[in-house]
Length: 79
Image 1 (cartoon, rainbow, N blue to C red):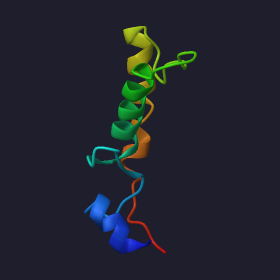
Image 2: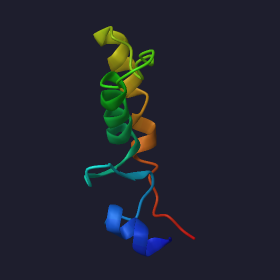
Image 3: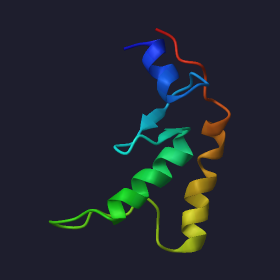
Image 4: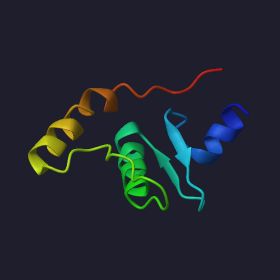
């Protein structure tokens, strides 16, 4: 664990970072939230979880816009 592992996932050394089950590397909260929303929609079996984003497009845009302050706050990780 540490920088070597993070650098393998995210060359910018910022968090959050995520490596998907198929090896795709994602970094930045909004991108990761979008990915999680998509895989939740495709969940199999049992009750379908609620979406992370509202289905109403105007409401979904407001939620996505609320991520903007976080985008500029990504900082290099430190141990």
